[in-house]
Amino acid sequence: MFKVNIAGKTHTLSEKTPILNLIDNSAKEFVVAKVNNRLRELTYELSFEANVELLNLKTSDGVKVYETSLRYLLAMAFHNLYPDYQIKISYAISRSLLVSVVEPKVTIDKKMLNAVVAELDRLVQADLPFERTVMSKEDAYDYFVKQKQVDKADALQYRPEKTCHFYRCGDYLNYMYGYMVPSTGYISQYKLFCYDGHIIAQYPRYEADGKIPEFNDEPTFSKVLKNAHKWAKICNAEIISKMNEHIVEDTYVDFINMNETLHNDMLHELGDRIAGDIENIRLICIAGPSSSGKTTFSNRLRIELMSRGIKPLRISLDMYYKNRDDIPVDEFGQKDFEHINALDVDLFNEHMAALIDGEEVELPNYQFEQGRAEKGFLTKIGPDTPIIIEGIHALNDQLSYAIPKHQKFKIYIAPQFQINIDYHNPISYTDIRLLRRIVRDKKYRGASAERTLDMWPSVRRGEFKWIYPYQEGCNYVYNSALTYELCVLKKYALPALQEVKADSPYYITANRLIKFLKYFKDMEDKWVPCNSLLREFIGGSCFAEVDE
Image 1 (tube, helix red, strand yellow):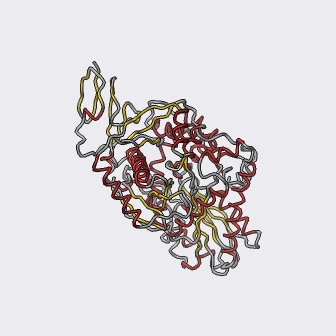
Image 2: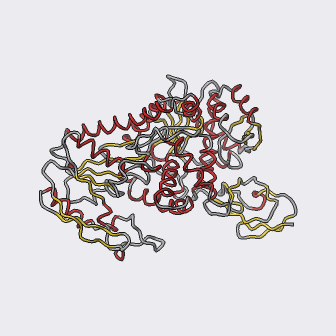
Image 3: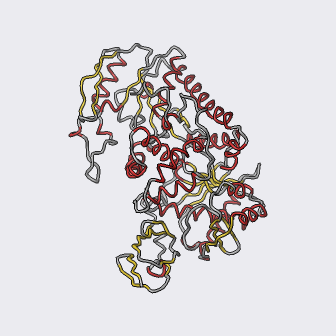
């Protein structure tokens, strides 16, 4: 006999019982569960004392399971309709999925879209069960080779475990590297439409309260992602197995330098853009989500401009924090240092306007330990000296209201990866930023991975509120992704993540990150240049002393 606490009730059981048998989920509201702090599918059979928490689409873990299941359903629909075509699923603009046909010169038109939507609707209405099955890695490899899915077969050679958990739905079989909902009937919420020869697939998001958010066309970012996809092909790294080949075949030094050269080229392009309008540009505004590499980027941009005879003044927005007692609080009653009103916006505008007018200004020197600003240093700039500012609110015109728009050059920076485990399983660029931050916080702040994971939801809320609404209005998007970086980050991130205990509330996230990191082969970091953006996270940056 054992007791199970679930949905406010305690059940005394004497035999294995699926979670679904203990709840009323006729509305299919719940998609997955936490069982004693481990993520489990709703078909999981309980056979021990357990506390069960049911998760819906208002939770991050719930949405991940839903998205994984939707990708399975999309792959199944294409398999049923177009068995000779392979599709690739990537992350796209407006937090959606992009479905492309891998075969060259095949674009998706309205007729194909309508057929796919009809097949998805049919599968959902049929409410077919997803049956979990175990297969040896060798048998899985043979199966995928037979199915001409070489991308999936090649990925398996880097899987450390000897078995794979497949999901069968009718006659269709696939491996999705994640948990699934119980049946196709759960995947009833999606919006599909044609977009530039592909399909955009929208699905519910936890940050939209479990609903499908309004689609925001972002042409600037669409071009960046398109270029990222082309780049992954150029450097032969669009899927993990191809990336790992650089290490197996000892071409990783070339691989590293190709990616660093791409960053150099983007900096050169930026330098041309700014130098071409230097008579007007007075404020260069840099913003991006956490762990995008803003510090290294702003230093490298400063040097790029110096090489053209332009000597910018770099100012940190952190200097303009209000005294700690004047910082607003968030909905949880905590000091909200990411709110724009945490900054002395009026003083910032007064100083920027005065500097641009050629006046001498005493910049503040904020002391974080004391939580207040002290007297800083006097500075004055010439008529051809632009000011570089970097921070969460840099793209928001509310921050720099006193500066005319034509005098501002806005740069959004973020890693925009287009890398997959295989064609059906893309890698989240949010996860890559999280790994960067875990490594950096461990090295420079002595913070455990658990501490970083604890702060991450608050960081993400700030990004959705203060960064993403202003990204599309920028003058330039700098893709700070280095395609090789996960092979380097792995050896720093894995030990930190493995310290997270099984009873930690962050174990589920840590375990998920560990599982996909294990697919990457280790790459030596001695060839990573000292001015590389990656050095901001792993250490050894030539800019470290500059920023102290």
